[in-house]
Length: 241
Image (cartoon, rainbow, N blue to C red; front, side, top):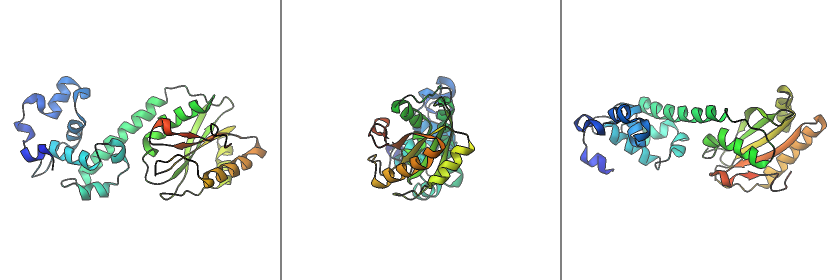
C-alpha cells in the first residue's frame, strides 16, 4: 500500500497548487507528474481512495511503466487494482493510446528514406517500437517501399503466440503487389525481449526473399524489435540476407 493511500488526503482538501487539475491549468501539463496526469484522466477515485491514490495504485501495478500498462488487458487491470472498473480502465488505456498515436503522427513529419539499416531501424523504432517492444505475443509486420526506398505503407500480417508466428510468403507477395511496392522490410518482435534470430526466423526470411525475387521486389531487411532501440537486430547487419 502506498504512503499516499495511508494518509488518504482528499484532493479537495489539498492546497490549490497540489490539486492535479488546477496545477495543470496554472503551470502546464509538463509540470504534472504521471500520477497527477492519471488522476486528471480518471477524474475521481472511489469511496476509500482519491483519484491520486487510485492513480498511484495503477502505476504501481504497471511497475510505473507506460509501456507495460499499454499492453495489459483491461480485464487484468480492473481485476487487480481495487477501484478500477471498466470505465476508469478504459480512460487510462485510451489516454495511453492517444499518446502512442501522437508519436506516430509526429513521426510522419520525418522524411524517411532507407539508405542503410540504421535508417530502417529508426523508422521501425518510431512507428512500431512503441507498441511492439513490449507486446505479449509475436507479431509480424511488413513495410512497403517505393523505388526511392521511401516507405509507403506498413501492415501487420499476423499475430501468433508468445513464441511463434506463422507467415505465408505468398501473402507477403500479394500485399507487395497490391500496393505496387518495389521493396519491403520485414519486422517482428520477440515477446521475451531477446533479439537473436532463431532458425525459424532465418528460414522464413529466406523463403520470403525467394518468393519476391522472380517479381523483382527487393527484400531490404528484416528487423527484430528489442526492448531498447540499441537492441534491435538487422538481418542485413548480421549478413543473414
